[in-house]
Amino acid sequence: MSPSIPAGRRTGPLARVLALAIGAVLVLGGCGSGGSGKIPAEAKADGASSSFPVDIEHAHGTTTIKAKPKRVVALSWMSLDVVAALGTVPVGVDEQWGGDKDGYTPWFRTQVEKLGGPLPETLKYGDAGEIDFEQILSLEPDLIVGLYSGISDVDYKRLAEIAPTLPYLKKPWDGGTWQEMTRTIGKAMGEEKKAEDLVEDVGGQLAAVAVDHPEFKDRTFTYAVALTPGSTEVGLYLDYDARVRLLTEIGFRNTPSMSAIAATAKGTNWYGGVSLEKLDTVEADVVVAWANAPAEVTYSLKDPLFSRWKPIAGKHYAFVQDPQLAMATSGPTVLSIPWGLERYVPMLADAVAGKGSTGAGS
Image 1 (cartoon, rainbow, N blue to C red):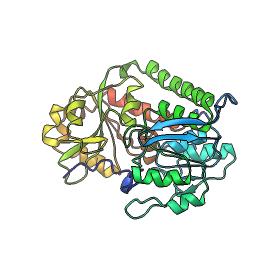
Image 2 (spheres, rainbow, N blue to C red; image 1 turned 30 degrees about the vertical axis):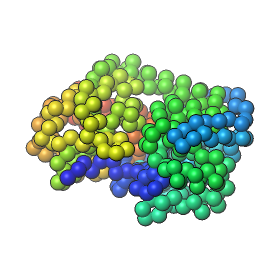
Image 3 (cartoon, one colour; image 1 turned 45 degrees about the vertical axis):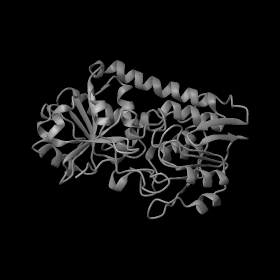
């Protein structure tokens, strides 16, 4: 059986967007809704808007934005956070993995409330993940953003008939770094100065973590998905995945086995699968993983092959069970990173120390 990994992103033409799959939800525990992280609610400066029109190149061509957008539809993960952080409440967004009963993450809801709301309409999809173009049209957007998506060329053309559209820049499900996403959307929104301020602010928070935790420096890691009954492989994320990039920004170093993991990835998947019987070939000081439910963590740690993997046997692991924390760290943005750091970092410190964090009670 293949890894139950990333379920996540919708499976339809659009892009199999968000994720979650099925159930998955991420986050780390206990964090309640509002969070106490130092979310940069507003960028420091007023202005310095770009002059329009602006042209932005992407995987499907070049999009020209003629005037500052006021009604933005944000598809998939992350883009919605950036739009809100730059001072504009989107008019339409996808329900988010780890979101509340209405589909909004706590950091996004808090930001919208700071901006005076109202909360945006959540977007609908067909059973196979088809975009509801009529719904998007009804929202009368003047910009559609989906940097972290798998928007196909066909869907892009239809969306572009509705409004200027920004799909992924280079390849599906790779929105670039959170800094690149912030700057790209900042350019599209005419808010390059605000975008740069946000990048500087959040980048400083990550740099501070690296300074406060020198034990993270150069510790090798791999990011996995907890096992489910019947699993014969472990799903491991590739180096361009956002949750992997985030760990490298606070000092960790990718497993030297990344090339071997990448060789197992199929199609445009952003993860590979390694047989449980070959796990000892994957070198890592620390294993970070997310789970859909506590039972998956228990199952993983009791699996006779998985439990013998060196970092697991040495309790150098951190399982993120809370859907909100999982989302905050799997789709890191200028809003979610500040929200998630104070919950995530202690788990990582425990993993490095060989205390094995399961996220329980966090």
